[in-house]
Length: 223
Image (cartoon, rainbow, N blue to C red):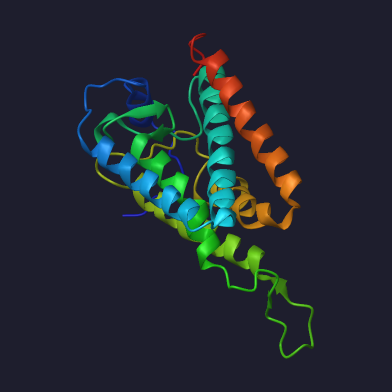
């Protein structure tokens, strides 16, 4: 079953109100297995000196954390976040809108998107034999991946264990596609278009901001 928009129902609000962030009540060993898989993927890419794939992964994952922190702040200030994950759908909830399994998936999503692009990263599609300038392959893949992820989130929002919870009636698959996933995959697909020094500055600034926000906001109880 697919759900395309939040329904603003009391039952959705009640589900959000029962979320236990960073509770170990449902914790199990799959947490460790998933972490091991992520480590294996990243170290394999580093061992092969495929640094562009690593940069792509870190870029998307960093943007993901910025979004999750912003979503948690929205939830703290307005009463309900734009998206939430339920207690029954995960072994561990990191922030109100992201479970351990989901976060680890996003840690790999940028690498997956990078590998789905053609070897010639500057290739342009839909040129119609050179009659048109065409569309950058990096943009096309970003849109394709964003659409896939948005549709899958729509499926998760309709699961019986409420893997995703959308409270607001104006929030759903379309705004998720446009405002969330497209920026995610643009980050992963375009990070390697910058010069090496610029890439490092961008990633250092991104992850420095994430670390600073977590260190400040978690102890304050905001997220």
